[in-house]
Length: 199
Image 1: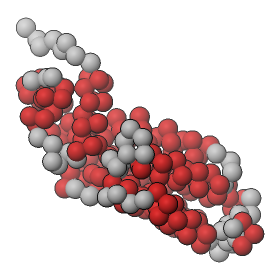
Image 2 (image 1 turned 90 degrees about the horizontal axis):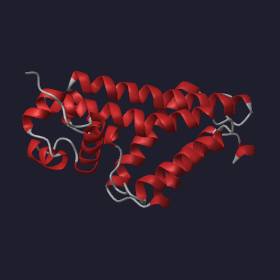
Image 3 (image 1 turned 180 degrees about the vertical axis):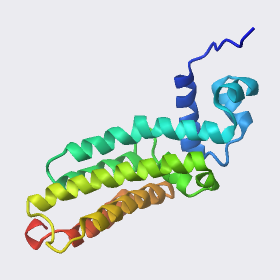
Image 4 (image 1 turned 30 degrees about the vertical axis):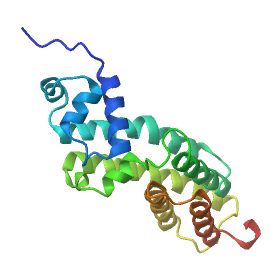
């Protein structure tokens, strides 16, 4: 008889996302995943494949549930530089306080581990980066149209710099950096992009 699943894979993925996000996928063993999800090893392997495939599935869910709504909101915000500043203010607040304080970002954490070397995981990391950079670029293009940016600013390079700044916030917050310090760094970057009148 075929194996019949008596569990919700989305619920299991949410549990794994939280486990990997808080503890790190590299340092989380299969025994901990079994304990957290309540599933047997055979059920985990039969449903998701190996640990790398489970990590990739968790990353994909994190991207769709946690990251993409935030990126979409930034791209839809028509304020330009204030929208970018608000994005970082919310990011710093989420990273330094609340339910997931000092967890960093599951995607950023994966960039810093050997998990990012696996092709199925690298593809999701690249999708996340492309979506983040595209949202930053859209906000910067809105800012440029509104006269908020230096006329000589390379918008593509600036979008990449802001994406890297988001990764830095994620990593430094996980290491205990204070919110005020992180926000000061963001303001310094944005000040370098804007006209004198916008500062």
